[in-house]
Length: 343
View 1: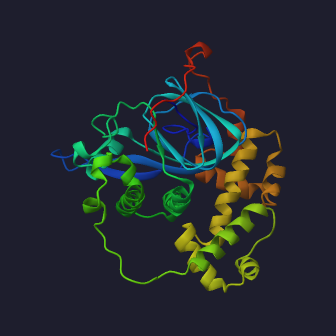
View 2 (view 1 turned 135 degrees about the vertical axis):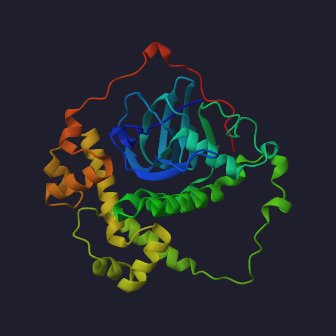
């Protein structure tokens, strides 16, 4: 089996140190009335160059949204395409090689916390695929094939999770919101954890839909068209008004649909994808910070630096001055392909 590209536990995805912190209070059952904050991190990453090996202190779930990449760990390697998800336990090295480019969302959490939460969602061990239940998983990589459409539909959840620290909410509200978002996410992918004989209509059809259509698919099409315009023309001085004009919607309606279907208002969504591309340029090129910032639409490099610092806890100039240490030796790489993928 294999691993992938996400720095966490003192590091962050895309090889960047100090990921976004969403602090979750996790009380000890049958213990004193005290709680310890635990990190939950969600970061969008774009890669076009191979990463170095790195060891991570937290468990990771990496979702390949666009493109493809080779994932390597001590257990082996595999090429994963858009629509695949890989889970890796804490304290394992991994490396990513884009083929030729990849966009992903990585969610990282304290492994003990993750096992407890998954235990809630998978209460009957006998209904779960072998080796997948949190009591059986040994931390080695697991691959799930969810499909590109399903992963794309989950992006708003990850985006909201990544933005939680920016709202400066009390710890308790961040905790509640984080659990809510994780529940939505797991609820959408839960069927892939179940054994074939557990995927029966009796268990799956617990929510009976009403008759008739309640949504307008054309509206979702407008949002993805607008999002595609922002990604394709990052450097332009976009406003809500100019974007609304491009897709023939009112500013109010565009904003409402963006929040619903993309997880953030249009201009905040633009900031996030600008930051994702700026991060890639910082990591993968020798372009000056000023030029990198301007290429994604920020004429003032101080704006780019501040957003970078808010996401990763370190300025881009300090990040470039640091060097990640290699782990393990080349002889440790297992040259076998990943076997028995789940899903």
